[in-house]
Length: 565
Image 1 (tube, helix red, strand yellow):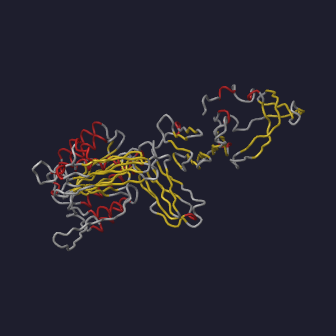
Image 2 (cartoon, rainbow, N blue to C red; image 1 turned 45 degrees about the horizontal axis):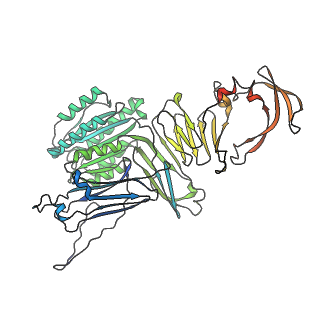
Image 3 (cartoon, rainbow, N blue to C red; image 1 turned 180 degrees about the horizontal axis):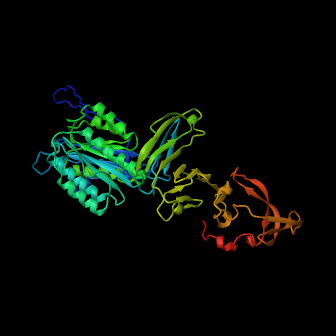
């Protein structure tokens, strides 16, 4: 509930203390956790203080606190500090500091007191297990933003007149300044009737954005509130665009609706409206509802958003309402992944919170919690899947070192550590990281490449962790595959003969006829780590001398990469 009342009877001159205890899961917005405290005492308070003690096991990386009612020089009254896992914010203005003027009895404490902080992140997916319960925090970095298909559904009924519509225009104009050139958008207006700016989604070119600004500045208000009709038209525009233009299907679709009241014409039954909207969306994209002011049925808006993979936000009728609207858009302006799902072994999980998220945005965080079975902790692991910004496979590059794994290096692609457990699927290629052990790259109709991370004794004076590259089903590789290993993925003729004692009494020599050349080879064994990454297994083979001269194409220095570590 958003509002509640408490009434008590106390004697004259007595004192009473109210203590409110509650739990709240802090959500991460634009890269920071945020705590907002509404400060509206409406009088001078003799002992007014805000004290926040923060504890984070991952350690705090930044901490800030601001108040909308404090000017620049007044922020010095806010004390804030952090070190390691602990942080503290304290605000304790005196009566004199609360006064709007030296002789005034009115308090300037009227607005939001906001605390923002973030934690240190060593991996993109942090997993915490306590007793039989776990919480998984997912906040990847360096992912490319997806192109958006966004439809704004705006209430232009008579109740929006005055400051509301003025602030709405201000916010929309600022949003148009922020829309990226590759994005697609449209406006739907609803009052007594429904009006679409364009018949379909249009790209955010300079010319289209300028036309949109003129539209926003000049549209008028129109009587009643056909909320059902406006929403259905916006959803239909999005659905139709995906059917007509295949290019738009890989973009991130979003519907954002703003209203300040309840439906008064068309379909007015709230239950039926929710049903209509859910049937139209069909789980394909999120719906975000913004409720402007105090007269809106926020419970209805929130329920409708949650049923359609979105969220609702109340926009308060303050001087900064336009910034509140724009601030919300900034939170959803950079979608990184769609259809994100956390998968866990069924035998390990007893109970689980929601593990599917329609869209993941830059600076946000996904949290999944659950309870493990009695034996679940032993074999517990998680696989995260999702769809991101598509890349042309002709430019698909994966850089792997003993420290990090980078997708599309040079293009600011995502960077993972060997501690991460990740599965990425894109355009027929699946990349899987098995923590501390190996990386698997599988092509749908092709071969599978395995990179094994071999650990050495950390205190060894010379040796370092190293990588082993192995190919499974190499016969599926293209005949054009080359490189030090790739040139041998397809069979070629060779013959070994004249087996004889070698210079080493324990090893035999022989002559190999290959590529019309005669080479001296020596019998030995090599380790195969594909089945046993720790100990490996011995495989008998013939060793070619002189750095493979005569066997490999070119010379060995053609294949050497400087500074491999």
